[in-house]
Every structure is written in structure tokens, then in C-alpha cells.
Length: 385
Image 1: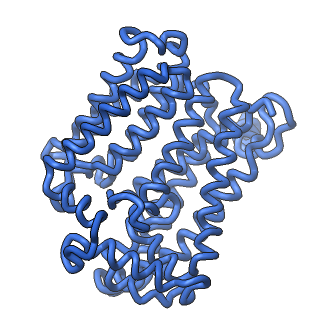
Image 2 (image 1 turned 30 degrees about the horizontal axis):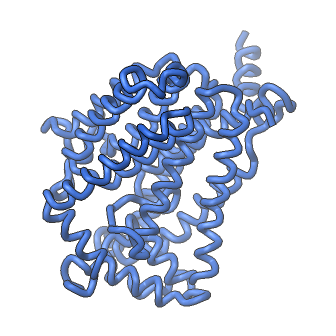
């Protein structure tokens, strides 16, 4: 019996990588390769970008790199494998649990015995001694719930009462809790995810136009209502208006990116990492661009494009609507986060403070993103092409 159990365990671990083509073929190797290279490059760039900050804070040049490895990559790879080995169809049974979890997690940041806030934002909680951002889990849980709801109600999406209004009620409640934190970057990502999935599921274009138009108006109202958001908008429009104040981060990021030129200053030779705020987190792309230059930065962007391309192919050939919507949600989430991070540092849009997937320092984001990639790889094993 013991030998039999050991054999079953070994088979469970290695079976996905040796399965024959058909119902349960090998996962998308291009997707896994791109993510693997991004993780390696992330550690490499982080070792340089975090060196000054790590030495200043901990008197240890590689403290933040070890933190990323121990609290991000290793547990992330573990949950990746569990998600990869768990049949995605089983997740649909827990759609209501995922929805309730979204509200519970977002609500806990306002409970004093759980929250662990940094600055004015209420975005962190502590559970069982572990500090993390619940909004990161909410992205994945909301995708899981919405995939199930859309696959059940996709024939009713052209109806206001049975399709659009129920969709907006759930999205609105989640958005209000995120705004309350406040976490404007996560809000933008959630909206991109929800509207993209709603569109792919067959929602009325007219309804989407109404929703997006109302959202744009609400966007400007929120900017005007909060001074810090208005400052970010002003800094984006004209960072020279206050280069040592509200425009400091953007100015320093643009100097870093411009200093890199075509081929960069060399890994570890960034000068701006001592000046740009959050060089290990939100601004790591600027430090990376300074060190490796325009051409190699395009190479990193290409890896994200490869993830996007393979993800949409997985969605296109997914075996059912639930898997299709799930894949779309994950791909839009990662793509939107990359765009918001890089576009903010390039002055294409206002800075919102979101990490660069697979590269920025951050355990919560990395672990949950790798879990999502595990689910995407799981779906890729069942595609029809």
C-alpha cells in the first residue's frame, strides 16, 4: 500500500509533462518559457535596482532579492504547480465562494485588528502573521467568479435587467471598496478585466458604450475630488511645474529612461536608482531601461507580448466558455498591469503605482500572478488546437 501511494504521488507530479496529445496534452511551452525568462530577468534587474535601497534599509545589499526569492518566487512556483495540477473545471463549483471572498478580503483592510497600512492607503492586511495585499487575490477571485457567471448567463447579456445591471452591481460594489482604500491602479485593472470579459462574452456594444462613457465621467470626478489624484494628473500633464515635488517621480523616471540610450549603461550602473522613488517596485522599469537601454527593453516588452499572444490563443481554442473567459481575464489582467506601469513611467498616462508583473519586488502580486499563470497553463493542456 505504501509503495502504491508513493507511485501515485510520483505519477501525479510528472504526468502533466508526459501526457499524450489529445484531451490533456502538454501545456503551452511558449507561455511557460516566456514567464520563466521574465522571472529570471526579474531577479537579475531587482538585484541591481534594489541594491542601494537594500543596503540603506538593512545594511545588506541582497536582502530584498532574498525576500523576493523566499516570499515571492518559491511560494509562487508552489501555488503555480498546484493550480496547474488542479482541473480548472472544479473551480467553477466555488464561484460563489470566490465572490464572497472578494468582499471579505476587501473589507478586512478596514478592520483595525487585521489591517497593516503603509502611508495613507489601507491596502494591506495581516493573517496568521503573513502580510499581503488582498486586492491581488481579489483580481484572481473576481475573474474566477465572473467567468462562471458569464458562462451561465451569456445568452442574457443583451438584457439590461438580466445581464448588464447584475454585472454592474457586483462590479460597482467591488469598485467602491477598492476606491475606499484607495487603490486607483487596482481599480483600473479590475475595470479593464471586467469590461473585456463582458465584451468577449457577447455583451451589447451599446451597453458597453454607456458604461464606458459613465466611467470616464466618474474618472474625472474622482480626480477632482481627491487632491493627490489631481496632483498626479497635473504632474503627468506637466512634470516641470513642480519638479522637486509632485513631478519628482516622473521626472526622475524620464531621466533614467533617457539616460539608457540604445544599449544602456550596463547592469548595475544605474545612477537614477538612488533618486527615483520606489526603484524596486513601481519604478523598476525606469531603472531597467537605464541599465539595458532601448533595444533590450524592447526585448523584455516582447516577452510580455508573447504572454499576451499565447494567452489569447489559449482563450481562442479553449474547450468551453468558462475556460475561455477565465483565460481572457488572466491575460487582460497581466497586460493591463504591464501597460499601466510602463505607460505611467513613459508619461503616456498618469502614474498610478502598480507593480510590473514578474519583475517588481512584491510577494503578494508575484504569488497570485504565478497562480493565475498556473491556471492558464492548465487550460492550455485542454485546448482544441
